[in-house]
Length: 270
Ligand code: DGL
Image 1 (cartoon, rainbow, N blue to C red):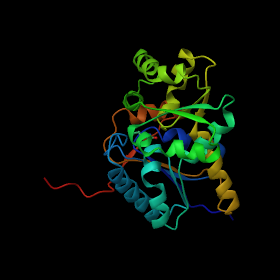
Image 2 (image 1 turned 180 degrees about the horizontal axis):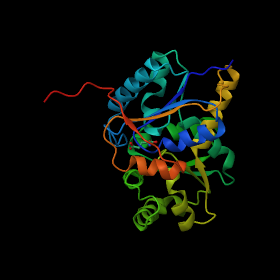
Image 3 (image 1 turned 90 degrees about the vertical axis):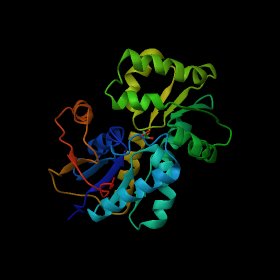
Image 4 (image 1 turned 45 degrees about the vertical axis):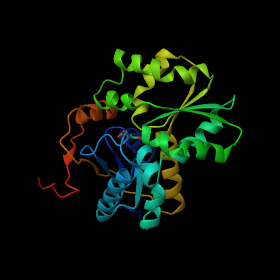
C-alpha cells in the first residue's frame, strides 16, 4: 500500500504549473494540490518578510490538507522562506533554487552562468551562493527581469512583446559570454520558445522544474512515500479570481483545468 496523501505545490501564479507539470509527468500516480497565490501576485517586487509570511500561511494551509510533502515552486518564495519554513514545519519541504544551481554547474562548459529572476530572488543572492557553494570558480551574472513575469502571467510568453523585453534583458548576459542560462523564476520556462528563437544554440537553458521534479521523486523513493493507486486527484486552487490563469494552464497541460478559489486569509475589513 502506497502513501496516498497529496503533494502540495505553490507559487504566486501560473509559473509553478511548470513544476507541477513535470511532477505529474514523472510521478503519474501522485495526487497533487496546487495553490496559486494570485491575491498577492507578483511576489518579485515585495519585501522578503512579506513573501515569507504568505509562504508560511500557504504551507500551513497545505499542512491542514494533510499533504505529505511541500514543493515551493517559486524562486522568490524559496529565497524568502525555505530555511525558515524548514525550522517551523516537520513536513518535508523542497525549494527550486538548489536543484537549478546544481544543474547549471553541471551544464556549463566555460564556467559562465547567467541567472534571470525576479528582483526578490536577485536581492537574496541565493543563486550566487548556491552556485559558488558547488563550484567557486564559476562566474555568475545575474539580472532581474520583472516585466517577463507580467508578460507570462498575461499569456504573452510567445509574443513580439516578450521578444523585445528578452532582447534587452539578456543583452549583458550574452555579451559576457555565458553558455548556460538559469531560468530562475518558475514563470520563465514558458519563454523558452522565444529565447530559443532569439538566441538559437547560445545557452543550455536550465529549467528548475525538471530538476526539482527529480528531487521530489528521489525524496519520495528514499522516504518510502510513493503513492500506488491509479487515477490520482489533482486540485488547482487560486487565492483570487483568475484572469488568464485557466487558459494558460489549459495550454500548458493540453486539457481543461478548472481552478477553484480558496480563502486562506480572512477578508480584510475596510
Ligand atoms: N514564479 C515566481 C518565481 O519563481 C514568482 C514570480 C512573481 O510573483 O514575481 O520567482
